[in-house]
Length: 143
Image (cartoon, one colour):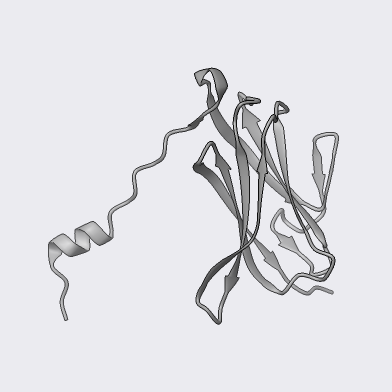
């Protein structure tokens, strides 16, 4: 079966980029940096390996999004997803919404009382209903 040139062009086109989310007062909110870790103190993120590899016993994983022009009126949402190979798709593990955030760092937290399953995960950061950034991470056994 061959594909028509029109179908191929439509299927392979890039999605338009989304504009920056808007917070209170119409100021653009952008994410300048994303850091993953197991600890966050005084603006510093620690833990994990290479900012994206964690161990099953890392029961708390943090996603720190550095925000330009933070706004207390903005709604931030962290969506944590796990790739389920058996189902051949992603499943939402946890969603966290935060409001009234005025610090330059907004911190999303994923935690579990039990060890994490091995595999590939992803965290999406949404601001005012628009996904602005995402970051992959992996849970794997180590030495």
